[in-house]
Image 1 (cartoon, one colour):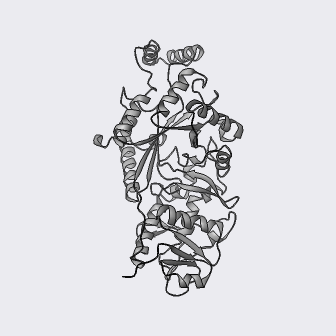
Image 2 (cartoon, helix red, strand yellow; image 1 turned 90 degrees about the vertical axis):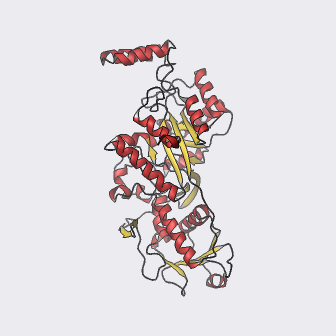
Image 3 (cartoon, rainbow, N blue to C red; image 1 turned 90 degrees about the horizontal axis):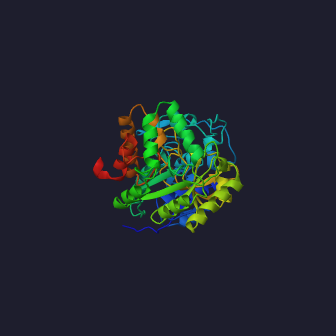
Length: 437
C-alpha cells in the first residue's frame, strides 16, 4: 500500500488568522500531525500526502469540509447557533451531503475555544464573571462534554478511513491537581485583633466547639486545620499525581484575607512547598484589573522561591475576556488556570486540551496557554446531592480519559481536612488514590 508523506495539506481560498489558528491547534496540538495551508490549487493537486479542502465547494472527489463564513470574518456578529444531534453528540454549523463530516469542525471548535459567546452582550454575576447559565453549553445541556475533543476524535476516525496510512501522534491522559491557597492558616499567625474578633464572633454565634478548636491550635495542642501541605505533598508523591499550588500573596482586603505576606512563616511555607511541587500565583481580587498590583504580587512570589513564575489563577475564577488575558501577558505570565466555572462542573471552553488564547478583538493569538479546569470544589455544593456530585466527577474524568485529555481539578487547603474527613476530602482522596474508590 502506498505510504503517504508526513504532512497534511489543507486547501482553502483564503488564509486568515482565525483559520490558521484553529487548523494548527487541531492538527499539531491535538492530532499531532504536521500541517500546512495553501491557496494554490496546483500545489494541492501535486501533493502526494493526505489532504483536505476547506472551501464552499469541493474541487474534485477529495476529503472535503464545507466551510462556514466564521473563520473568514472579523469581529463579532450575532450568529445563529443551531444545535443538531450528530450520532448522539451535539454539533454546530451543519454542512451538506458532499462534506466528509456533517458539520464545520473548524468553525465550531473556534467558536468555543475563542469564547466567542463571552464577547457578546451578557449579564455578569456579582464578581464580574460570565455566568455558566449564559453559556450555550449550559442552555443545551452539554457542559459535561469536552465537545472539541470528542469532535476531533471522530474527525481522526474519518481521516483514518480516507487515508489509512496516515500516522497520528498519541496523547496520554493526565490528571493535574490544582490546590488553591487563599489562606495558609485558619487560626495561627492571624494577629491579636483578628484572633479576638474571631473568638467574639464564635461566642455570639454560640459556636463553642470552634472556640475550643481555636484555643487548642493556638496552644499548639493541635495542628492548624489549613496546614495540610506536608500531607498533600506525601499524598501526591505516593500516587504520582502532578500538583500545582496557587498562593495568594496579596495585601489584605475585603476578599483577600491571608496572613501578612511579610510574615516569615509565610515565606518559609511557600518555599518549602516549592521544593516538592510547582508553586504559582493566585492573583488578588484587585489584581484582576490592576496591572501594577498583578506585577507586584508576581514579584513577591519570585522573591520567595527564587525562580520564574509563569502560571497564574484569578481569585474566584474571575475572567473578563479578552482584557484579563492581555493583562496576564503584560504581567509576564504565559499560562492561565482560570478557564472554568466555580458554580458548575464541566468545560467552560468545551475542551480538556490546553490551548493558546485567540483574541477576537485584535484577531490574533496571544502568547498565553490556557489550561481549562473542569472540577472546582465550590461547584460541588450546587449538586443535588453529594452522591450525585461524586458520580458526575467520575463521569467527567472517564470522558476525559477516553479522549486522552487533561483532567484539571481545583481544590483548596481550606476545604480538605485530613483530621476530620468530610465529603470533599473523601472525594479528593478517591481522585488521587484510586484504591479508595
